[in-house]
Image (cartoon, rainbow, N blue to C red; front, side):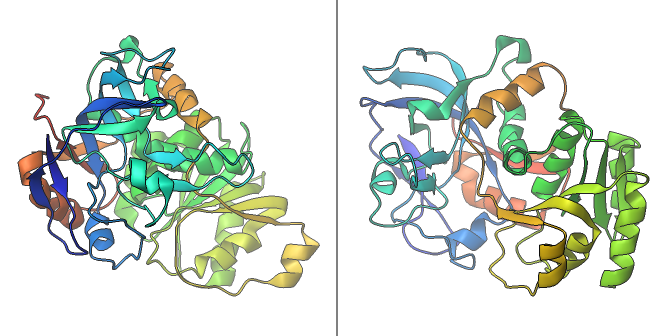
Length: 360
């Protein structure tokens, strides 16, 4: 089969003919129809973002496709099923501290998971564990390119689940006008948020948020002054209080807003950290202790989240029309696609690779 291969830590991928994967017990082979290209992929390839990678590697984390082959122990999935393919792969042999990899993206060398499942969806076919595939209902149609948005929504959904976010609560989403943050706004609204507060420095993005999501989304212009910003966040919550803060900042962004956000949280409130920043930050010890503030990290999402999220899509609870497919590229143009995604990063748009050159 044809695949795009990363042979060393550099920006360019090589188009190669490689051996097609075979389904063994516990696994499934999928014909890849569409997969997202995130704006920071080149930074991962070149080790600017030092994600561990076992080389050679076929990149690409998750996607949408059609099942071509199932393992002999498969009981539910069938050849021909139209499926979402989840790239977050979890070991099965340790229920307490299971190892995880992100297929084609974060694959430590020497891991049994990496050895078996590291190759991702920048290829005509990909191998997945059975539990990583979810059938997309016929009622939603068969637009593979459109459903690449599922991953964009799943990441913040994982944070909301981790923080035990409930309908009727108010949440502040840091990075809410960014790539994953905007998905977080959409999911929080779908889950019944009383208000979604979104700090921003862009009047244009403020207007776009309100145009798409209405009055329950409250953008707040930030000043950079922590005391003033904390007061503005509290004021935006109105008569209620801020129950949760979800950190979906760009990993390169300043972390100082975390302090003003913590100051705005109600007692017993929760902050969920997901941005992946490599930096450190000083936090106010005494107020955190006094107000019983919960601070927790969250990496991705539980396996059960995928079916629930697709259920919300099927029920019409989540709007996806705000996600614009900025461009689609065939596998032969994968390097152009990676460059395009980098140069056209930001909210409201995404770049998609179609390894089997499907018509859209």
